[in-house]
Image (cartoon, rainbow, N blue to C red; front, side, top):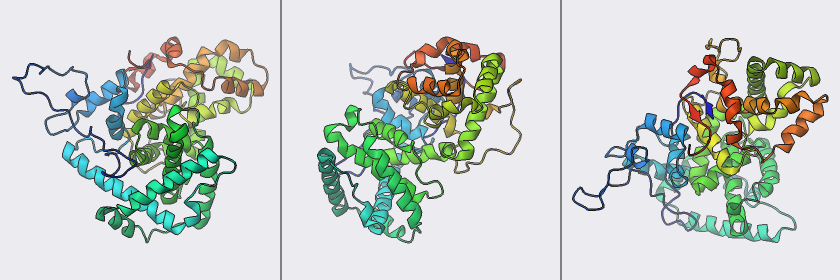
Length: 419
């Protein structure tokens, strides 16, 4: 499926060495090649991740973007690739520089955790009722946190001391914690990663969310953030790395969790649908005054609840490439005039991959949508698709979106992983 989003992308080591709950990420640099005289020495495949590094570990970012667009990284490569995609690693960093950065980021994350835990001791433990399995997981997680704290490095202690003067809004913290504690126990518990012993990892999701909300109180916590943190944690298998990737992701995706941001994204989707399928657009507007509001979950969560797991990761990766170019704290929509696609009011930079995917789904199901005569039918339609969408079924519909005017959005993207 050849959708054409804009290029971009950027992208820490696993938590601290010696900590009982973590292991050190061993892929912060290129794999060493065997000496030429060794019989097993073979040239690296031209599209392998190892082939994208120079001798000191600098990554060829344009080639990485192309690889992610065309086929996506292998499962074992995502721990490294995502830290570039989501702005954890500077694009021109060497392997040694990344090792130093990993240590600093881990220390800073632990420092942030210990500061809010010291300020709000009643918020440290998740309170659950009638869930013995979860209660045992909470006890185990706190034992691990105690061990980490007892083995704190001088750098971690320094980070904690430097953050002691951070000003918290108690009311905003309490509000965020309340919503997080309501959402975390039901986050992806069907995934094997979070079952049985994995319940301890759900507490890492909680820890990441509370730490983020405590130190980003301008936005705080919004429902749906837990879905993204869950994806980052399962993929990276590191609380520290998942936190920093989430921070990088929120630099450009955070605006979607504001009323203005999601309103803008829905409006852009409406404009694109009006451009590619005027009949369907007019019908939806005539039947429902809320227009494409029934697509809210798709656009807010980047299809994380609607696609099968591997497909959801691919969409998140491609959005990472798009967002990395504007990985900046400035969430305001650009006031400068942006080039528009001929016949479509939306600026090119707003025609992101999730918007194109949203419209492709609508076009694919146009006959069914045209048969609806009540607004609630559109909402039921989106609910029935939850967890059932497959990217490869949208291949033909995407071709219909590939008008010449849209071809300049960026390099072609094969939507089907591995093809």
